[in-house]
Image (tube, rainbow, N blue to C red):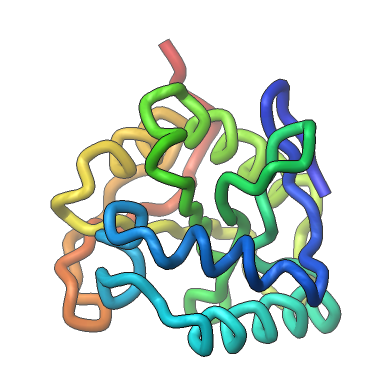
Length: 169
């Protein structure tokens, strides 16, 4: 998939459900993800099945993120937002504050531009809960432009679109 200085984004394997459940069972990590609560093992089984299907049928999904030594620290990649790709990332709470989300988002934006989907427009969307200031800042640093606030599945979210290159510095 893709690699950064500190991270490896790789495909899922059917046996990865324990790692996914460990990530998705942490209340702090899940505060701004989905319904804002930890997920059950059954929900993680379903989510992993979806990821496996997406990577097989369309070639992109929200992939496994790990350290170069193989320890899973998150998931990141793309979901569908209407006909477009939507950038998303979730990292373990103990990895926050080290610039990993920015590093990851930059790599995924690059992957998106280098691997266009012939069935999707080139626009790349992203959203974050309005209260998730850290994630919103990451999106802005890597070149996303704020569009507006919208309700997304009962959560007030800030919506962004990727319009140009990174604005780091």
